[in-house]
Amino acid sequence: MAGKIKINTERCKGCGLCITVCPKNGIVLSKHPNKHGYFPAQANNHDCNGCAACATICPDVVIEVSREVNIVEVKEIKKQNCGIKTKINY
Ligand code: SF4
Ligand code: SF4
Image 1 (cartoon, helix red, strand yellow):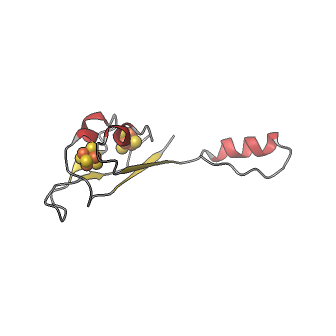
Image 2 (cartoon, rainbow, N blue to C red):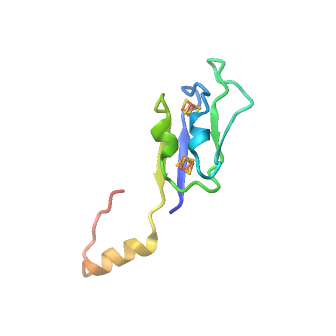
């Protein structure tokens, strides 16, 4: 499943914990400081699988994770519901 993260770089303190737990090496520290003088984490999002390990470990809760819904999965659910439209929240 493909994922994506968004980091609030102005609130990040650059501790690097998220970098140590990412299984895809998808996060680096920026070379440019934020307004508080910290070098914040930056995501490349190329291989993110949406595991949320980074968001879970972040002590400042500044990472948001989203996951792409598998279109085939959604079609299958619609089929099972005999064409009845279903709102799916992930
Ligand atoms: S959600 Fe998982 S794969 Fe994606 S950046 Fe965070 S730790 Fe890495
Ligand atoms: S764990 Fe949180 S505060 Fe630490 S570098 Fe990553 S995003 Fe920034």
